[in-house]
Length: 266
Ligand SMILES: Nc1nc2c(c(=O)[nH]1)N[C@H]1C(S)=C(S)[C@@H](COP(=O)(O)O)O[C@H]1N2
Ligand SMILES: [Mo]
Image (cartoon, rainbow, N blue to C red; front, side, top):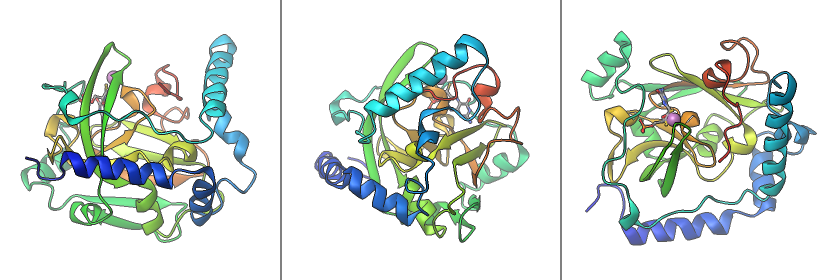
């Protein structure tokens, strides 16, 4: 039925993910990434990069800290059955970035699309779509919750962000955030708690097909414990950084620049 996966394959996939998900393994993996969890930056996991002033800031920090404490074992979000997939998954906000470069790539069916991974990685490099598809393929059927009041279930197919960073030589010890730029001007930042999560993938497929244009072709992020606006579409480049200074208004993402919570955990 599907180009990428079958129901059974998905079940097998999920079992494998559950097996690999022990805290010890996570630390080992993160250790391979440059000792992220071992170099004394644990408290970074509990506070946003920029705490908003006043009550909002206190609320943000408490929400993030309490969820992070509860989720310190890196639980997986619930995965659904193929029969629960929403028939017409919405296309929300941007549906076809106008950038000339994006339009050129789209007309060429993204054959020339390249994803640069730079900053605090040991071997900066780019990945083509074909190269991304060569990483172990992960599928997950999850629900997407938009802060603007809708939710829908889809199957996402992609490569773990963790694997991609490993293929760029792993990250340097100063690495704290992954900043992702998108065509159309959006950008978002993520900390390593979410970056190394086994369900955080660069998705190039949706419901058994290539990712449709309006849902972020050729590649979008799925960071499953977050709500809609963190699920960045039309990915252009990835940068590993020690600080979110110098990106937009310096809050760590376009949405937080405009007053949304940086930490959008659902
Ligand atoms: N680049 C980019 N990413 C984006 C958006 C966008 O407009 N541009 N919208 C966000 C919001 S608010 C939501 S709810 C989801 C919508 O994803 P969909 O269009 O696949 O439904 O993408 C998120 N990522
Ligand atoms: Mo959203």
